Length: 200
Ligand code: MN
Image 1 (spheres, rainbow, N blue to C red):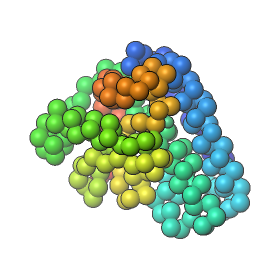
Image 2: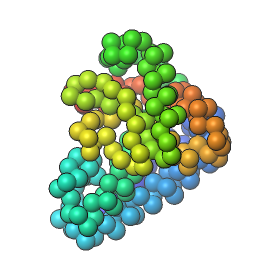
Image 3: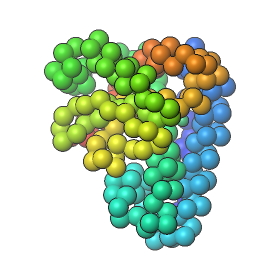
């Protein structure tokens, strides 16, 4: 088995005007594809690991042979994070159901959650991600550098935002906070509820 970039479950322009078509094309077709190519190249040296989903490999990096461990962390992380991200996005879905209750219980309301999540995304220095994760049944907000996956910390991603410049620079240039604000219009809360259910 070789890893493949999953097809986008919507058109490149489906998230306009919040995330523009050209960014989606380059981000999905070029950046994600490069992570997958490099992940596959790394796994050629260890064919016994080729059938394992990237998420599995990331859950126990210490079990990965040392000569490809960094490559799996970076490119396996890049593959898993982006696959998660595409599936998370859809315009104009309301936050409701179990996730709304859990957010209110944990953060004291949606606005407080949004504020804390946005701060984590804005303050991640350099490239990386901000996440809402489930950690032993509890929700928490974290950020990770580069393509480091929450799975490698034993945490399950529920919501994630890519804050690498390639995710927003064409439309927002240096205005990362505007991109973060826009991201809140394209979170598919139905999918987030699925992620929460699976984490339990
Ligand atoms: Mn990216």
